[in-house]
Amino acid sequence: MTMRPKMNSLITAGLLILGMLGLAAVLAPFIMPHDPLGANLLNRLKPPSFSYPLGTDHLGRCVFSRLLLGARYTLCAGLLASMGALFLGALAGLTAGLAKPGLRGVMNIFMDVVLAFPGLVLALALTGVMGPSLFSLALALAGAGWAWWGRFVRGLAVTAREKPYVKGGIVCGVRGGRLLRYYLLPQVLPSTLVAASFKTGWMILGISGLSYLGLGAQPPIPEWGAMLQESRLYLTRAPWLMLAPGTMVTLAVLGFNFLAEGLRDALEVRQAGEL
Image 1 (cartoon, helix red, strand yellow):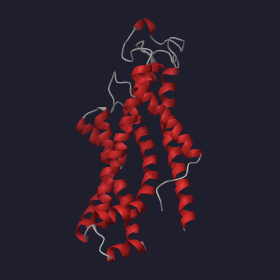
Image 2 (tube, one colour):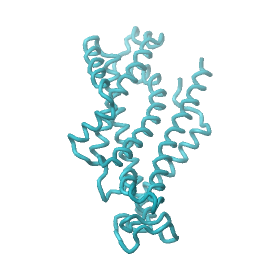
Image 3 (cartoon, one colour):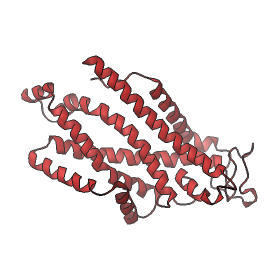
Image 4 (cartoon, helix red, strand yellow):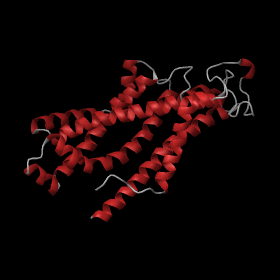
């Protein structure tokens, strides 16, 4: 199966949403109308206006500017957590699926032990050890999520190893990196790509949720979850304070979910056409 899925409406929608969010994150320093960290108590809790498109918060800071800058923190932290978990899990999964029996057994037991702990509890424990910060939270979520990826990649590797053409390559003397690159990765990567899109959305949700609890970004960093946490006391008086970052988190998760669904549909159609 090739790795070039056909575009469909879900992929297009996902890429459009994520592209807009990514563009906002990249261009934030150039399009922010105000200093996102500059407080002005004379302008506190102002409703949306021409000067302040999304109003101001309890310290008089521009919500729109903070939202743009917050895209950098939330998206980068979510991607770091997702890619970190995937990298560690892929190494563990390939080892558990392809290494010698003794090493495979040890790795499988280790992953089972890690999976015995609830992921959220493990992330909270790791964050408590490292201290509350956005970087620590991303590392904690990666540390809590790698074992799931290990089991996932292991299952794909074991299934791919039993394919007739893979067995034929092994019989013909194909080993090491060549076996991995030309025989196994084409079987493992499609499903991994779909799962990674789903998991990245969940990581962004986890980053924002735990930051809302005070375990991630600390004031005055305008991470979306931290913005939700700061605005919780003003829900009835200034609802735009929670509406803006909440909408951005929802859009980011929807973008990755649309992308994952579209990739899954496209890859399934292509796979069916090649059978």
